[in-house]
Image (cartoon, rainbow, N blue to C red; front, top):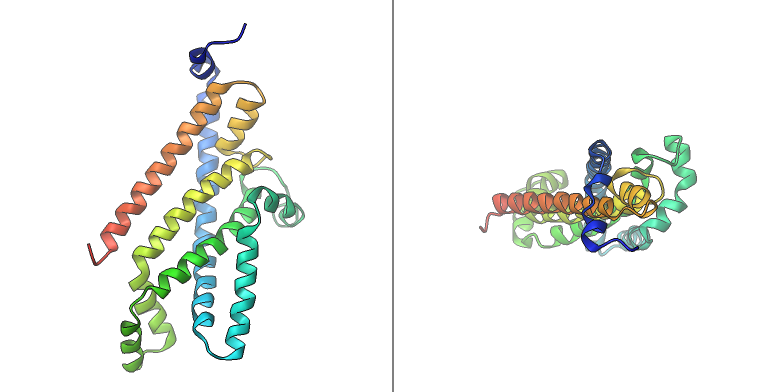
Length: 229
């Protein structure tokens, strides 16, 4: 006899707390470690897109085209395909294709170009008058980047990090289906494969809670750093 709706989704006897604690830690580990590298790499690529995009010289335009094509390529490849494509590289770097650490290369490579585009957009929104005034005062390019461009873009950069991090949580869930661990793995391996829908439901709720907390934190930081508010 088919189980009722309540018995299907609210059979908490299927839940093992230790499994969920371990899976939540793995999801947070994959998300925050990859976010750290995504922010660094994304800022560098975003700066390149911004400066090469402004250049009127043939070299600058050519470099912008190269960086833009590479960036568009990696952010366009579906994550589940990218992680499979990177299996040999992951095996060479990490030594295994399973576990949360093995998911990091694919998470970073897929999310860094996405964040780089958001960085490029954030830099383009900086008031040109402020940049021209800095140049007129004799500021070097490094001073303009670290004392004008990035500080003026902080709210947009934080908003971009928030969007990117939440996107990566979705990626970690997909990576879990092929052995990366985390809540996605628990939902697929323990829930779907074992026909235990309560596990899937609880894993989904935990992912949503993480997303809501990150969105709230991101919105709060944007509000605190936005000079217009």
